Length: 127
Image (tube, rainbow, N blue to C red; front, side):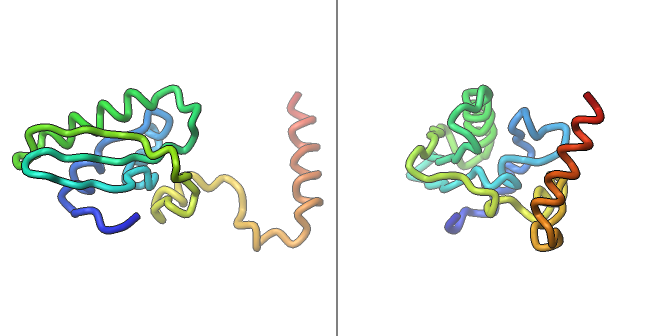
């Protein structure tokens, strides 16, 4: 992710992708903030998206811009999506990883195929 000033990380720690708001996972915890640069009193924020199909992308970009522009040293901000860099789950903070974990760690499953088959059978029982 490179070094992003703590003041920006703190400012953006209460900005949420609508899909993660109820879990309390911010754009910072998701690892969506790629870079932040400042020239004079103008900030440029580069974000990654978890999916190019995110229906809430425009909302997230607006929320990030609005939050950065509330910083006393920033008058204007622009936010862009970095399409040439893929988001991966290794960008998640430890806290976000714990909140999103619903499957066991892969190394904890000795028989992957058996585990998947057992859970597919359970899904079939719920139908």
